[in-house]
Length: 227
Image (cartoon, rainbow, N blue to C red; front, top):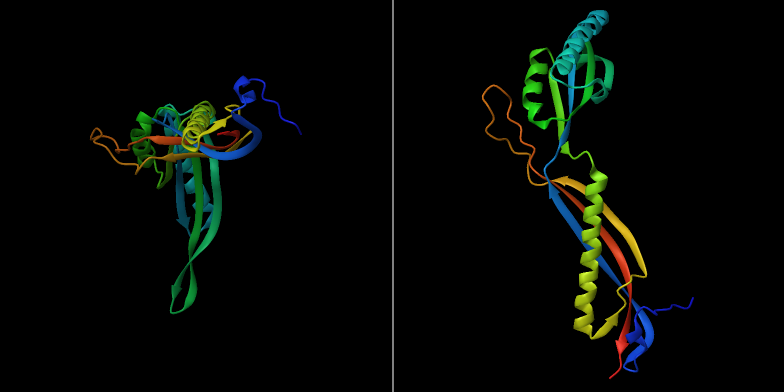
């Protein structure tokens, strides 16, 4: 397929070889932001030799945990059941399995839209009977908007690299790319999720920063100069 480059009049110069070549350049872009939401897994584990008793005990405590979450300002839409399971548990005595109890696990995935309340909320649900807290994760709600910003930076980075190669190789690069391909999208915490000096009456939890990054593969046409 024939390519036209009428937007670059200088390419018609007698000093330019009109036979084009392609160069592939990778561009990277990232932005660092403070998270505005968090998620955590909160749950209740009970054990009893009587299955019905284990279930009833778990249900009573789980309802207390749910009520506490609501009292702490967590909306129903931000609480969902993550896991409910029942399993027999055994001890090994002299190489033999000996039934110990039935274990009932009921866990909830909770979204915190006010991350300043995470420590106090965790303390409150633990006080109401929750005995497992896992996978506290910080992120941002509008990831698409922030990713698009990182994507723009990645494309600009590829264009800057093309400019550098143009000067270095003494060629003419058509600044309109032939093709752009998204390569990677990544959202990750920066460093460890460190603790900070919180008020003494709540569990200290620090959100840190997260980095949203994008990478692109960009193909440019370039033309050799005639000497």
